[in-house]
Image (cartoon, rainbow, N blue to C red; front, side):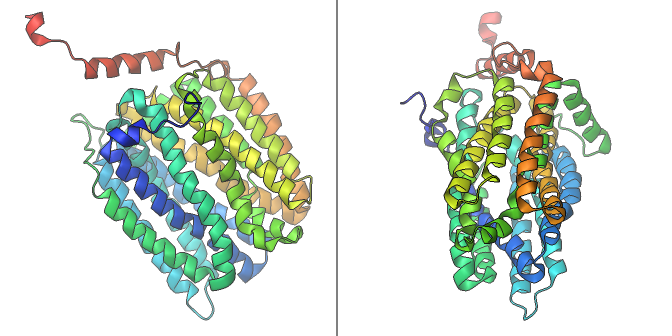
Amino acid sequence: MARFTVDLTPLRKNRNLRFIFISGVVTRFGSALTLVALPFQIKLLTNSYIAVGAMGAVEIIPLIIFALWGGVLADSVDRKKMVWRCEAGALFFSATVLGNSLLHHPHLFVLYIVAAGFSAVDGLQGPSFTAMIPRLVAHEDLPAAMALMSLRWQFSAIIGPALAGVIIATSGVKTAYGIDIITYIISVAMILRISAVPTLKDGTTKSIKAMFGGLHYAASRKDLMGTYIIDLAAMFFAMPNALFPFWADQIHSRWALGLFYSSGIIGSIVVTATSGWMKHFTRYGRAITIAAIGWGACIALAGSTNSLWVVLLFLGLAGASDQISALCRNTLWNQTIDDEFRGRLAGLELLSYSVGPLAGQLRAGTTAAFTTLRTSVISGGLLCIGIVSFAAAKLPDFRHFDLRTNPYAIEQREKKSHQNNPPNSNSEK
């Protein structure tokens, strides 16, 4: 069993990682409440599929712009400072949406502005956070550390949405927003205790040229491009989250709205809790492809039934499939990309796993508006299977990726080994 149990060693021996973990558990819990409250409030104000799906649309442009620029900043400034300043920015937006919810007639446009603001802050913070981990954690501990980073998000994401349904039903969205504010304050206090992560001496300049340098590096690596394309396709075609408030109504289970959001997380946390196998697994290209196809199949099956518990079962299996893909992608990225490009590539990674879901919400909502909710869910799952299979067939470098033989992975292992065991200058003399 020890082979499959999540490895807690990095938490025990790394003080910085403990603070990051605690901060993430707290702040993600509050964010999960807001994740449910925002679309629910839009639904209350409009009762429109398209209006709820449009929340994803207003988030896309800020995310793209700020994730790319955030990647450049992550390679040119202290990454810790970027993370806590962005966390403080998110606190401001939480306070804004709380103030709006206290009005007698809350403004719809404020909800969209806040959604765009959260997206911009996430875009700025994400690359610095992702690029910070390899600098604070030993190279051999990275697979376990990334599993723990997933676990910190999943723990809060299970409890948050489940409680959100109860909190919103009993106290309204304003209580959910208020709790989110408190969690941001605690999170900032934790992040401030982390060691500084300054830029390298020859760090990247803050320029458009530097941003395009990162894009050129990514484009030169077909194995990386495969991870981005596969995840974008899977999330765009088969992300049903915008439909959850309507889906719960359709099967007469409004009380279970939070379970729609948390069921996928439950599946993913089971995978993370048994992620010890990551220490021995190396064929990430194949695993990511199969997991993305599994995600699409489970979403299609969830849309084919009106039984609440069967729907939740397939959403849970979809979450498990997605988490297998996420663990493999994160390890592939962190063990093959040089620190010189780590921030800028982290910005692209953020886009690859964020733009797809946001655009997918608009696709799901628009399709449901012109057809039916069931058609939107099933067709999305089937399209995911088809597009992912086609893309993988066209990307052999990605499909056959193996951590043992990949030249970039070998180069990073040798570089880290040299840094940890520098040559003895006296013996050389």
